[in-house]
Amino acid sequence: MTMSKAATFMSCGDHHQLSLECPHVMGILNVTPDSFSDGGQHAVADAALRRAEKMLLEGASIIDVGGESTRPGATPVGVQQEMDRVLPIVERLTGELGALVSVDTSAPEIMTAVASAGAGMINDVRSLRRPGALEAAAATGLPICLMHMVGEPDNMQNDPRYARPVEDEVAAFLAQQIERCLNAGIAGERLLVDPGFGFAKTLAHNLRLMNRLEYLQRLGYPLLVGTSRKGMIGRALSREVDERLYGGLALTTLAISKGAWIIRTHDVAASADAVGMTSAVLKEGK
Ligand code: 9MG
Image 1 (cartoon, helix red, strand yellow):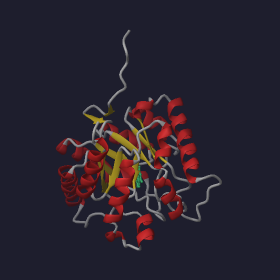
Image 2 (cartoon, protein in one colour):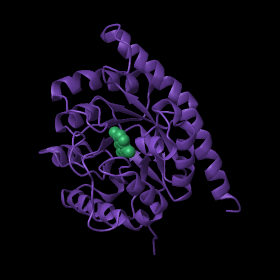
Image 3 (cartoon, protein in one colour):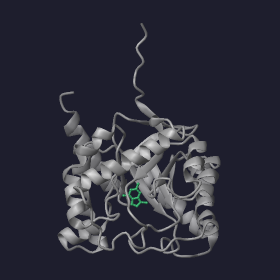
Image 4 (cartoon, rainbow, N blue to C red):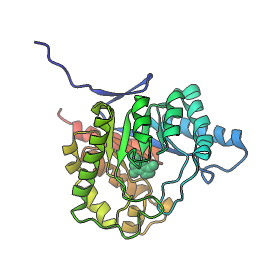
């Protein structure tokens, strides 16, 4: 009798395999106009490339490229504008650096284009709910991160409330999105889930979710967590955006100890040490 062995890695496009047996850091590369001082299109792309290269050297396994802000209150950008921001950067990151690139997008046209440009993962904060996104993402063959959010970034923080405990709401929502993906022919091995810290959540919701992060393991999919520099740290500790690193590292340590597989962060060097140290302790004796 032949026993089939569970895959120990996730295939991310043609050139990358990500081990499922150790945690990873995903470095954030925003290519919105406020992210780099504007010295023209090429200077911005060069600066983005240098930042990505630094994050890779600091220990990032994945670079998450985003051309649309999803911060609370942010307004959406048009697809062509997002394409102009993201596609040239993805082409250079994959072509010149050979990086594993994830793209933070909800637009089906962008999913298709970045997959052709060599991207290895899709990160959709709207969980493929835009018209055409499910079909486009399915056709890329890439892994997809499904995230919990209610509403849109411009209204999601208007008094978020849930009828049930937040972890139940998040788990039920993610289970529904997983089901949609499986029904669309996307293999379960391609899915990751994310509770969406800061997306339609109060500080109390965010703290409760982090405290109960293990609960989401019942879904049976690898977990991605992003808390980097978020408002929950600002509110819990009374810290401005540029003072949130230490609070963020505490959350990273907690998330890894509760089973997170990928940590999405602006602060790669510090986070890579926190992830590495936490996982060394967790592996002790194994
Ligand atoms: C794009 N983006 C901003 N915050 C995020 C988070 O927490 N998770 C994921 N997957 N994407 C995010």
